Image 1 (spheres, rainbow, N blue to C red):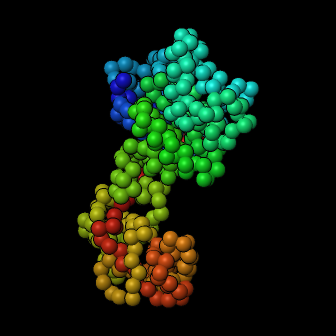
Image 2 (image 1 turned 30 degrees about the vertical axis):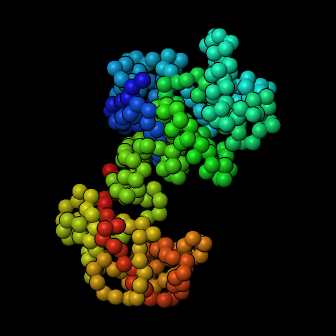
Image 3 (image 1 turned 120 degrees about the vertical axis):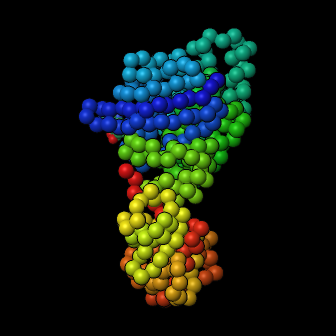
Length: 354
Ligand code: ADP
């Protein structure tokens, strides 16, 4: 097996460009999540990776083998891929074992090998005890495990997962994220996981490609995309975020009215241009009103108790609002004047995506 390399990949549907010059490397054995809002080009990328569609421009390589280009597309059945979709597409009239064995039967394996692979796939997804049940006797999560076992049984080189958990309820979805990561740790199959759910991407992936409008905005580890977002889109799409706009006065320095705010500068903007300072609500500290750098004063407008923290909305004197997630032991009251400290090490000056 080998790394998958996507080079300058584009896909147009008529005049509409769904994917624009996408460059990605998926290291052998890694799990890459394609993350972004609906319509950003995730499924298009997956379809091209699977060989269901022809790129308009660019190439996909597996090691030294060219899988896709505008002139040539190796068909899905010769790529060693398995796909798992949102609607699990398991056969209602076949048992769990019959569903999982289906792909193996097409491969005309000997009886002993078929049984060994079937047992291994069922054990991997912890369905061994339910092998003789029919789908209607299973929960949604168990049905999705059947689809996963069927995809794994054929021992693919690449596993493609397209919103695999979207049909499950919130509780099951959370449990299955960890399951998908566990199975990946156990088998080490190179995997591409399409999702619009940031939590799923952060839990399951080694690398996350954040997409918007057919363009990869950032490729990085879950921590990198959360802690060092490339632009305001990534900062706001992954987790909660405050955006404060002002004028960049110097590298790492934003002026908002009469206040100076300092932070890491990754905006690429020139002095005097409008820039945005981003900070996570969990990093904002509330205190008594004060005048100092990296502080903004304002009035508490709302304070919601969420058990593990309080979500405080502050209307700033200099315009705009700020959210702070503070300890549930603090009880800021609506109408109270407060000072929000924005620790410089957690502030980032960013620009909007191109
Ligand atoms: P995502 O998976 O991120 O939701 P898609 O890759 O499915 O997004 O789609 C990207 C864009 O391309 C969307 O605007 C979608 O409407 C468009 N698109 C996808 N497939 C087709 C198609 N077969 N014909 C025309 N437009 C398409």
